Amino acid sequence: MKTFTIEKKMVGSELKVSISGYIDENAIFLPITETPQSMVIDLGQATGINSVGTKNWCKWVQDIRPPTIASIENCPVIFIKTFNNVIGTLSKNVKIRSFFVPHLSTDGSGVRKDVLFTLGKEIDASHVIHSPKVFDDNKKEMEMDVLPNFFNFLKK
Image 1 (cartoon, rainbow, N blue to C red):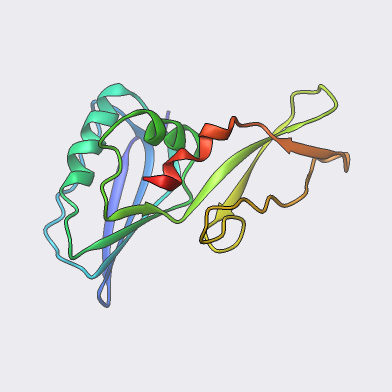
Image 2 (cartoon, rainbow, N blue to C red):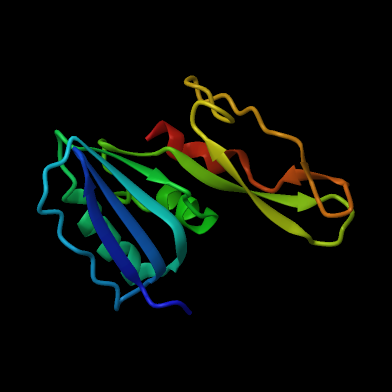
């Protein structure tokens, strides 16, 4: 398991936060002492989250207050499931801008590929899904491996 790290960097009026590793009881979130206009939280290197990590995340994300508008990028599937099931994981001014959607091979091989979806591209302003065609290494089409409620976080 990769050790949790968090890095913050101001770029103009935007705060960029990169989170990597596993979010658990040992994860220490740096307090948000800045009041940036916007904030980007990149979860692309985050490997997972457990129940205590979810509690720590909730405390941290609730401290992101207006006027700061925060967006989450490269959100892994496990975080989408957590955000859908745990109240308080997203505040009103924190939105997910890009996230991974699991796709499964249709040939029964169990091959899975997580595909990045981005608001304004695969998800339009009305939250209509425009799923791209996804193929496995054998050029066989894959299908989305989610229930309709997977996208519930878009309504939060």
